[in-house]
Length: 251
Image (cartoon, rainbow, N blue to C red; front, side):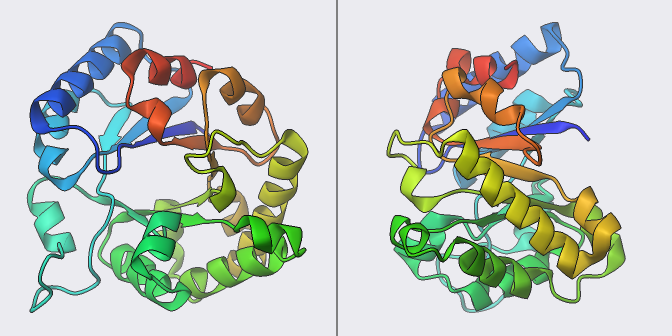
């Protein structure tokens, strides 16, 4: 299974900077082709066309959207549809990121609806899950992860499993500088693998890549990628700097 290194640029970078960053990144990857790894960039909506243009022809790089609304069209002011994203060349999306859950009130049920909606329409989905510090300290890790995977993965058609990725991000480690230790990541990813396999069957469960996210940096990337069931990384702040992100990609 290829390792996936994903960059979530969140609400950062204006168009000129985003385009330049993507050009530098893709230029470096073109000069030094990746082996066994692929890169996904999730820029803000206004930056997607520039990043798509910069990555054209680089087979190891794809571009996704950070959010979408699960409806074909309609009176949903401020939202964006999958048809709009497909129209500009995007067929990959994030769903369930902790910032969408905790800052914007997206429930497990709504995330499940979004995930199913996107997969049914042929999109690839990176489903984000993860516990708060209070939930971990209360011994609720498995219960939280079970709740966050059960609804989105229930009744998935077999032909959509190949387009699903799960990203485990402990909420307490996102943007805090803290990172879950090897034992904590190992425990969580083993739990996710077991939960996904229980829902999708052994073959389906093994086929779904599981990424780790949460204060990933060049100095911890290699150790994280060596752990069982860590099939890649979802990188936030450290992906905004080209040299830092390249170090993580090459870790």
